[in-house]
Length: 266
Ligand code: ATR
Image (tube, rainbow, N blue to C red):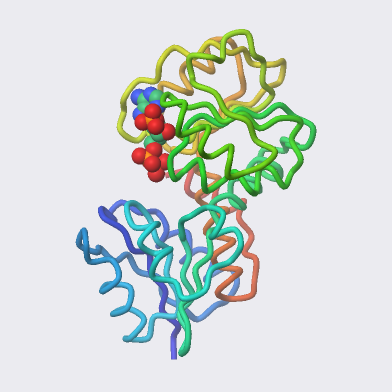
């Protein structure tokens, strides 16, 4: 019987995940389907349980349900616990395993696709919401010289820094005069198309500015390009977090570069 997987979110119609997993499955010869499921707000658990009850083997979870998926899981991986959120579920007879592949996807996009070593680098993470929290542990595992979490509301950044030893925190307003090799935008400003405050740090020579949002010329990327920093959006992270989920479900790491090229071409 063909194995069924899905991505659950709200909204979900424009998700690229069905296409990404269809390409992975075709390239690796896996007998599986992957569909997009719209869950009503407040109806995530029922949608996920219903999918599992009708033969679903696993699901990706996207906005706004990652915290609800964390609560639904009966067992959590260490990286899901650290993230406080789940983006990948594995359904079996006796448990619902919750994992989080977002941070691993980001690190793989940075280190493999973009060839940026994180070890020894001065890293600035902008934002202190769920998206930021989800990537801190995998970033720290790469042993940066510094991981500074900066947020408009400083207290939220300090709360995260207390959770993750090895990181430090400040407000966006306190960045003047600082220099970074890698700056990652994990704020939702690009998604909501709201402007960031004027960012006052400087980019080191050969620095990379990375926006976790994809397919948009965000204010963050515009501000980074002005002084000549190399800039990347989060499409590679999307493909790599999907590959990590696929590995968890199927035991095979799919090749990602051709998928990324196909997505960029359309
Ligand atoms: P997500 O799950 O996408 O991280 P979130 O938990 O609502 O969403 O967090 C949004 C993050 O983006 C927060 O760090 C928020 O800053 P505040 O904590 O000060 O609200 C940040 N953010 C959103 N819009 C922003 C903007 N226009 N300028 C600066 N920071 C912004």
